[in-house]
Image 1 (cartoon, rainbow, N blue to C red):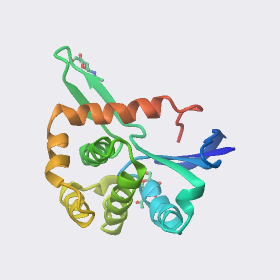
Image 2: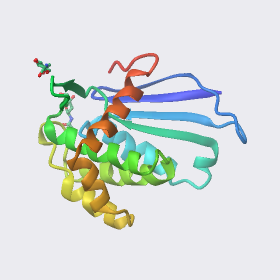
Image 3: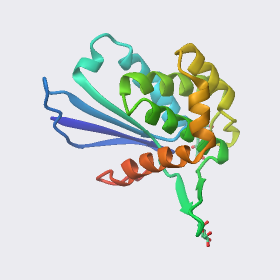
Length: 184
Ligand SMILES: *[C@@H]1O[C@H](CO)[C@@H](O)[C@H](O)[C@H]1NC(C)=O
Ligand SMILES: *[C@@H]1O[C@H](CO)[C@@H](O)[C@H](O)[C@H]1NC(C)=O
């Protein structure tokens, strides 16, 4: 079985490793490790991932995870408070925090969180929210949540509290566990 790991941190890139997803039928594992304001990540989601995901039957053959973290960094103060820094600035961290919260609130159910992340990244890309013009994603995230009939209150509650810290740290761990490590 082949595992494709797309390393879409700001130089694009992908590569692979073996990963067996067994039951009930073998599936291809697809890991999308990305940054919310990386234009290459967004372009991949818009041009390749979303069309594939929206093709009937795709999720029958592919087991997908999306991991919003990339080259984000965290730091824990002596008081146990976390701060996060991102390649494309604080708005990128805000986007990744929202997406991490949605993943956590869905209990890591890709059928729930992938449409949210996909639609948010498509919106951000459409308005040029990336690189140095990475914008505050909050209002767009709220619209996407409404479209998908997700509770924005619940998401925002996570984002505004330490629940959000742990949601992000979980994605940090998944990214750190990547072997071979994230490079681009
Ligand atoms: C991390 O936090 C500690 C404690 O507050 C501080 O001394 C250190 O400079 C911080 N490191 C970075 C990289 O910000
Ligand atoms: C974003 O920044 C990267 C790195 O500086 C650059 O290569 C890329 O062309 C930029 N992309 C856009 C769409 O501005």
